[in-house]
Length: 316
Image (cartoon, rainbow, N blue to C red; front, side, top):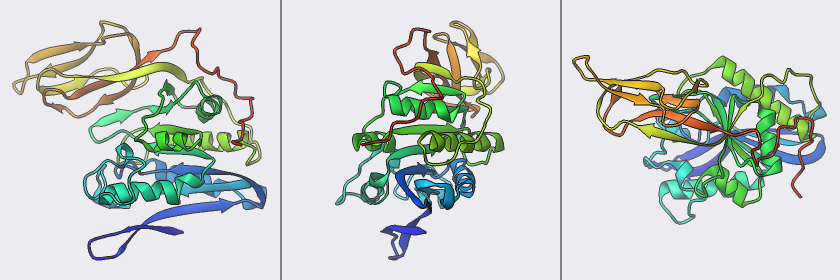
C-alpha cells in the first residue's frame, strides 16, 4: 500500500510504501521502519525478507513494514529530505511548519502513533562504515530485551534524543530501538540476514509468531556510552582498526598524511573500547570524524541483563 504524506511542487503526491501483514488473531502492532535517511538502504531488504517470512494464519497481531520513510531522499541518493532537512532531528515536526516539519508530523500521526513496538533501521552515512549495532535505553526492560533478542554485534546504552523518531516513539510510550545495519547505499547480505533473523526473534518473544530454533550466536558487546573523535588537522586519513575490534587507550588508530605523503598526525585511542564505526573517506579536513568508540560496560553494570528466555511484556 501507499500512504499519501505530502505533495511536490507540481502538486503530485509524495507517498510512502508500506507492507502490512495482519494476523487472524488479535495482538500488538509491530512497526519496522527503514530509509528515514534516503541513503540508508540495508533496511529495505530486511523488511522485504521479514514480511515474506510472516504468515497471516500464524500471526497474532499486525506487522507493519515501512519500506522507505523518505522517498525524496532515496531517489536523490541523499540522506536528507527534499529541503535538505534531517528528518531524524526534527521529530515530531509541526502540522503548520516547513515541508520537512509537516512531513515529520505526518510520519508520527499517520504511522508511528499506531505501533506498539518500533524498530527503526538505519546505516552509517556516506564516508563512514558501521558494524551491526543497536542504540537503546538499556534501563528499560522491554527495550533492553528487544535489543538483546536482535543479536547485534554491539549494543550502546543510549537514552533517545526527543527529536529523533525513536525518541518520539518512546515519548508516546512505544518501546523502540534503533538498529544500525552496516554501510550506506548498498545491500550487505550477511547484515541483512542477521537483522531479519533478529526481528523474527523479537516477534516470537512478543508472542506474535511461532518460535523457530535459531543459533543464539555470540553475546553482543554492551557499551555504557559511545562517542566520535575528530581530526585537528586536514589531510589524507587512514583509520587502522576494523569495526568491532577492541582498542587500548594510547593505541595508534589512525594516521593523517599530507598530500605529499608525509605523516603529519598519528591519532591515539583516547580510551580503551570497541570500534563501532569509522571514517572510510580519505579526504579529511580539520574536524573530520575519525572513529566511533564504544566504552564497554563492566561486569557489574546497572543495565537490564541479557536473558533471551524472558517473554517481552506487552504494552498496556
